[in-house]
Length: 187
Image (tube, rainbow, N blue to C red; front, side, top):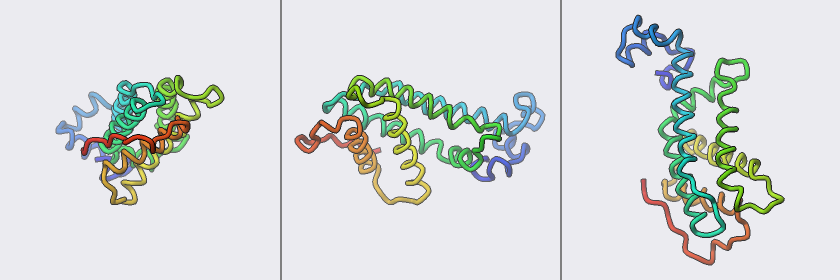
């Protein structure tokens, strides 16, 4: 409902109808459409943060490349699943909104989890947290832009390209051209 009508355009009656509950039942669990939206954002957050649970350490070898490629594929799958909600969130994000700090908190938590997987493989002078934020910004923005601008690029190409760029960000010393890189499975 939020994806079709937006946060402010969605009415309680419509939300209740989509959920197949009465308006009265709706109010037993939620006090407003903002509280429903918040609950859905928590589901988005859980799915996004769960992608980091499967991310292995990004070592300076093919295993590290495979780890980042697998994570990017999983992360993009979650972004695709939640794209309609993420669009509504981005359109309504402001520091004054009830959900204003959600995006910043999710990026902070995500970057902390990603930084842990990067830390062991980075040179000591490179900050793992800043590297994680940069990598997240690239993957997040690409995910949103590819949907918003209807980029006609296959999933395998997207995942492979982002994985190569991300891996080179983290391990520029590794010569990826010297070995064949595994391609992601077609989704």
